[in-house]
Length: 199
Image (cartoon, rainbow, N blue to C red):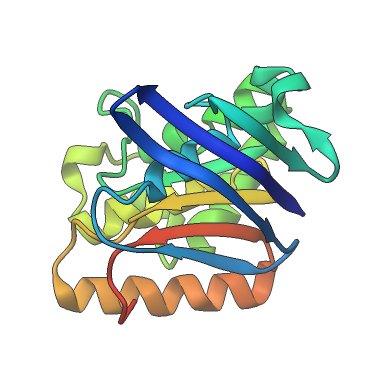
């Protein structure tokens, strides 16, 4: 479980992104932060993995304050999917997905199995996609690779910041359906940011 206790983020006296929020995100469920642009959704999301540090209050993951955690260990235990995917352009699909498992020093054979398993999970044929570069992918395909990369080390928590916002409406619906299917299968703790009430 993730718990926010009286969390505030101020950039200066006049810019308060988040003011005194308290709420809980249940384990193994999807929680959506929804609201208009500029209301603090992304800032709230980024405070969970300490990309943004709170000005006040506490954020707890399973009872432990994130500010007391080793930042590298914290981030390696949290998958992160952003709107514009953020794939490394010089690396193949396979190497993009394998980024965190390599950092965790997984065996090569285990990494290869995991990459194939995840490509199948997100609906991309491993033999066809593993060696492609990001520039060879459509927007929807790249977004699927981004989701696979976030799941690569099997983190218990996934943060998703408007992950389907940059793709066309038809692809977006397909990605939403695929994501719902994946969550039914995996039951991760997911924090999903959107401004789209239909989503």
